[in-house]
Length: 163
Image 1 (spheres, helix red, strand yellow):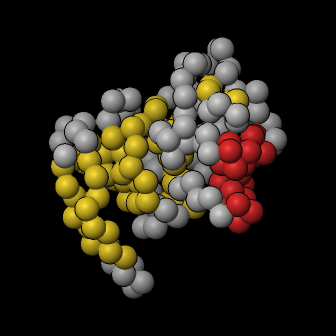
Image 2 (cartoon, helix red, strand yellow):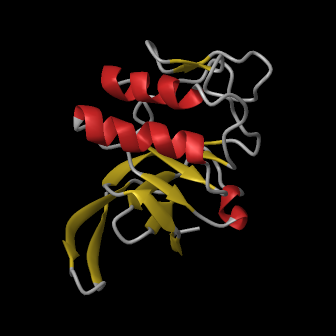
């Protein structure tokens, strides 16, 4: 696969690099994620038992209760949240949790909405999420951004270092 770049809509800006944790099944964070451990605890979900902490969680959208934003907010506060969340559809409940994490605790967890085709990814790939401009760099190899320069006019310059 090499490197692939895709674009999306940033909801919460930021830049992270992490291993993708991908599911085609929406997840309810309320009753589905333990905010103290970062473990997916919904035993009917395909990601059951997986730890989201420090990973780039790629899901179509959230499912269920509006209290999911509170679960995400608590995970952000405790440092057990995903490094970033990538959605295929705008989700105001997940968005609220991510926005409040930044506003209340100064802990930014990038959130970006991309097209549904990109959800056909593999768990082993690394994702570099640059949510300032809505760019995601995907690779089967270890990838790090060596230098990121943002132009306020909307231009974007990056250099990629493959490790």
